[in-house]
Amino acid sequence: MIVDIVTIFPAMVEAALAEGVVGRARESGLVDIRVRDLRAFTDDRHRTVDDMPFGGGPGMVLKPEPLFRAVEAIAIERGAPSAVILTTPQGKRFTHAEALRFSRLDRVVVLCGRYEGVDERVAATLVTDEVSIGDYVLTGGELPALVVVDAAVRLVPGVVGDEASIEHDSFVRGLLDHPQYTRPAVCRGLPVPDVLLSGHHAEIERWRRGQRVRRTLERRPDLLAAADLSADERRELNEWIKEYGDEGH
Ligand code: ADE
Image (cartoon, rainbow, N blue to C red):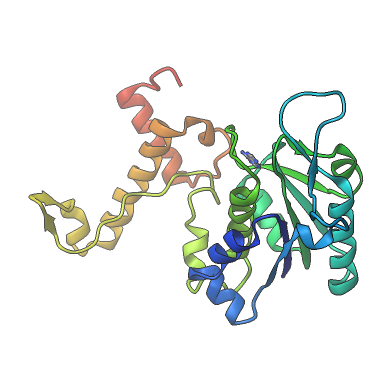
């Protein structure tokens, strides 16, 4: 997977991509990520990337020309991108399904939005996917771009060592994960649930399944409607609902 991220804060984006799982994936060549400074694609002395909005109003808008030039330069260097993503609060909500779709593309360009927005001609003609990471407004699109790239890169085969851990991800089947504990068995007087120390694998799995269903019911009932539940999980869910009611969900 080849990823190019266009930003006015390249040092910030580069720093985040140098660490951890993504940093290792880059070093091992599983992904090729480059961070591009939008100012490098300006042509004036002040390297201007933004301007006032036509029609008036507060804030500044990212100028179209540097973004067009950036994507053209990247396409010449790397080949035509399979997707050009723009991070913006106006975008479609980012989900696990979208992360999986992006992870399967060969070449992705991510444009980090900024200020009051990005000239609409860029969104209309260059961008294939406008993406929002949630219903809140950040100061810029850099953190959302890092979220999108991180979520997609970890789904590239070989990036996460234990593939089974991806299958257990909270949003793969629409259930939140069960609680986890590690040593010591008692910390600050707080014990680990006995069942986890019992060595009974079937019992442990039953307990975890119950926890996953219960947590999802309590915290994210919206996920359950679309969840891909096993027969055991469905039975568990119905028992919880019968015992505690659905509390209006
Ligand atoms: N830029 C500012 N806020 C954003 C958000 N929530 N998602 C994507 N891009 C953004």
